[in-house]
Image 1: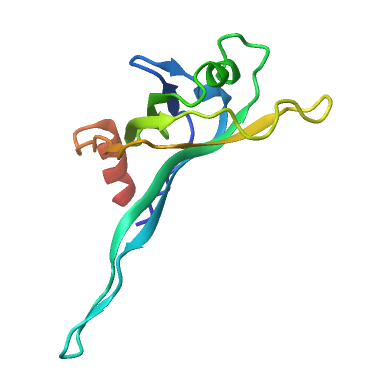
Image 2: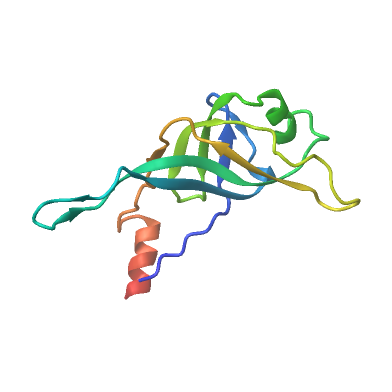
Length: 156
């Protein structure tokens, strides 16, 4: 059975709880992870070999947002005000998705603000996570719930 997940009607908040919700400015968002080898492979006298260990090279919260520099309380102003600060974040990709929380170091996007005349202007961002994020799985509905009934009905 295929499970199709979408990023839609989610939330992105930055700052100390309850934080500031910037969900309506974000058009693309993702959690990135990179991994590196931790040492070298080891071969023993008998010819067996152990692969090198692996470690997290880094994690980040990245995406694209619509520039909102005409809003004094918008994301653009927030980034300028908190440039290079570590702030808590909470990201929920959709209404029934997991919750990912942690801390990111904010940076004003590298590209300049502004763009083509009379067009929607966006900026790409990538904020490094300063600690391991917490992934809280969604609560799974049981068969007594409406979602469970719909699922059971679809499988019938």
